[in-house]
Image 1 (spheres, rainbow, N blue to C red):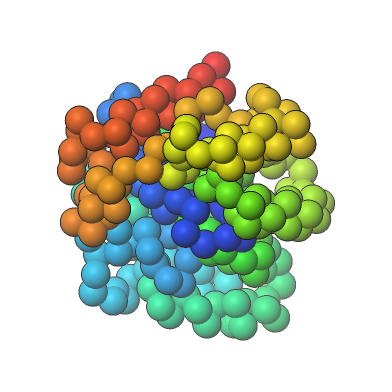
Image 2: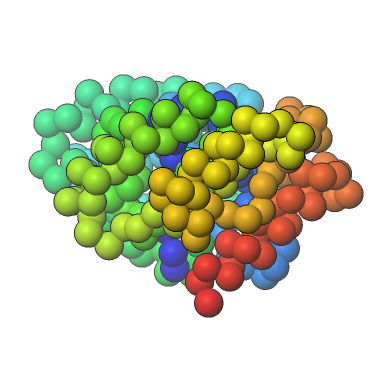
Length: 254
């Protein structure tokens, strides 16, 4: 089992879109994947069609684990759009304060994930900040995957995130940067190409996925419908791009 946090300090860069559609692409290749939503905004949960506020969410098990109650993640596991999901809820916004005084608070999610041996991959969709929830996700993870738009402000967000990431590595020495996925990419835009080259120079070509996710309205429409891109429109550019990303992703683990 490999645990991957999908993170970036900048919102709207494709974290949730990548979590859903990379998971769906890997499922089509026969892999067993679990999605965990640790963002209080619950974008991942809602993008899989869970619109109503739910009581049995990640918040419930985090709180029980923190205060010594017997619990497990599978207590709140649901299947949404054919994908296994640990959903989020607005209640999670209070978790940062509630967990602040708990001993070993950085390890709570890690302890909950350890028993999930049946999965090939676990993807954690993180909030766009380095609070206790993101720290818990990173401490739980083997890798971090960073989606970003090929523009100046998202690149600044990446640099800020990686400064904090170096501190988190003191808590989790095994975690590695898996790479950067460029989203909403347009080969005709000079800025997009420039940001790609800047990333390759600053962090190494091996860390920039060669698969770019093109701008594609079908990706947004799929989330609005509560579906992954393959279920919504398997012939779209979005489906083609995430199919190729899943292939390249798996090649990193050979």
